[in-house]
View 1: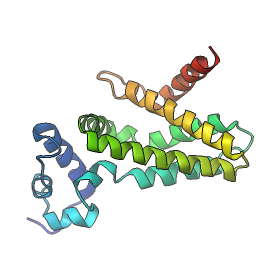
View 2: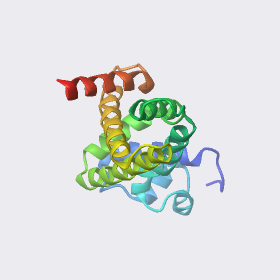
View 3: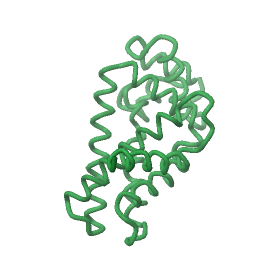
Length: 188
């Protein structure tokens, strides 16, 4: 096996998701993931702490990008709209080119209660980071928390639509519709 091949992380993601689909998350080993990706287990551990991190490794980057977009956004934009705009920008950067992988990841997480719990924890941490970014923009703590939570709900609804078979619209286009549905639900 060559010592170095390009795109190791992306190949590990692909290999892991293929194996998780084929034999389940619990029954898949790091060695199998590395072998399928054409790498060694040591190479796997250079990129990920464990096989769960293949599914959650982008969380820190997502949080950084989202917070940066919120901080750099127009301060006159209402908080909820600012977060949804930032989510659209970040979706274009991080998700659109990986749509098939992200969709497979969602299915793997949905099939495993332990992974669902971890996903909820990551979403809670992301909500807190969004709220902190909104407070840095001058929002009160309550407004920041409510806007962050509402934006996360809109994102989850948009993600469900985006991940449906045959759906081709970019996530950035689905986010405003999800936000509109949320606003209609709250005001009715």
